Length: 153
Image 1 (cartoon, rainbow, N blue to C red):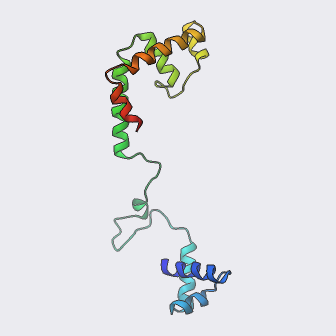
Image 2: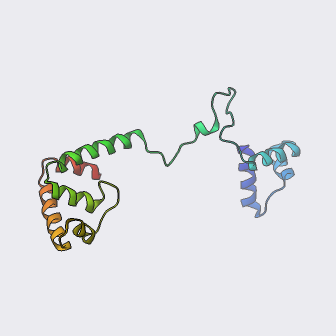
Image 3: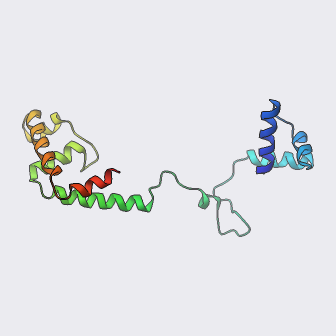
C-alpha cells in the first residue's frame, strides 16, 4: 500500500494532476485492478481494533501512541514536585500557606486574584500582596528552594 501511495504522490507532483490507477500500475508493473484495490483500501477507514500481523493478539490501536497520555517519567516527576512543594508549604504559617495556595491555584487548579483572596480573609488586596511578597521571599531562601528550581528545567 505504501509503495503504491508513494508512487501516486510522486506522479501527482511531477505531472500536476492525479494519475489514474492504470498509470500508477504501469509505473509499478502491477495489474490495474490490483492498484485500484490498493488505492481504495488506502482511503477506507481502518478500525483501531483490527488485528495486525499474522497473529490476532495485537490490534492496530495497541501500536499507536497516545500523545495526550503522560509518560511514567512525567508522572513520577510531578508526584515528586508535589511532595517537595507540600514540604516547603508546610513550613509556612497557616495564613501564608493559604494565600500562596489560593494565589497560584495549588489546591484546586484555579488561581485567584488578590481581590478574591482579600475578600476571603476580610482584608484589602494590598495586604494580601504584602503577605504574598513576604512569603515568596521566605520561600526563595528556604532550603528546599534549590530542589524546586530543578523542576523549572
